[in-house]
Length: 190
Image (cartoon, rainbow, N blue to C red; front, side, top):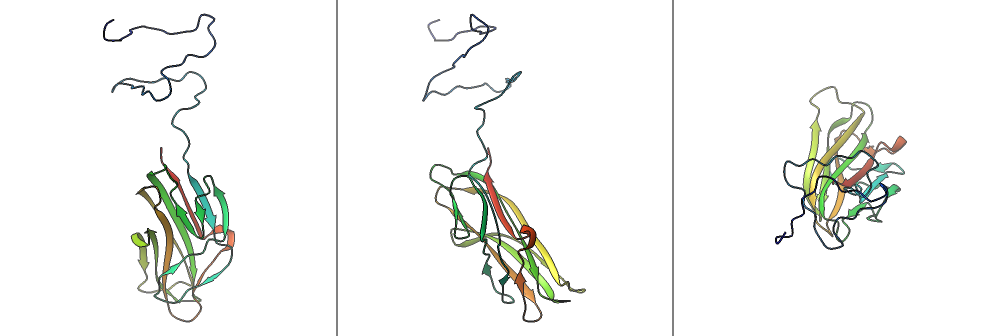
């Protein structure tokens, strides 16, 4: 075996129980294309967790002006695995760049027959990155539930914020907070 290749059919401990270690710290173990890994027991240590992960929701009503972008306030933090959510902003921790699922929901209200349209924006590093929107041409509702969910490539240090935009007739445009209907969440994909 001059090339360092070991070919075996089965590896087991002499007693049939114990630990078998493949490689050591700093080494890479490669599973070739087309190979299958089968788990007949308890899998631990595979793939890791979907962290960082966070979930926050609004804690009180937030007034909004018509046709104006407003950063949404999320006053109650429910989950924050890496202490990466603060001041209504998710910041990707050092060494945690990658693809993230990021989402938000906003419940808007403006009074009877008053909501003309809405936008939910995801901002990355202070700039609009992606948005979802809707306009009503008739039968204007009093409330609107707006949402967005995207897979985003994020790097360490990137900041993510949610902005809302409501077009309405009248003077009482609001973002609601009941039952966590206005929320902001995300996690790193494996």
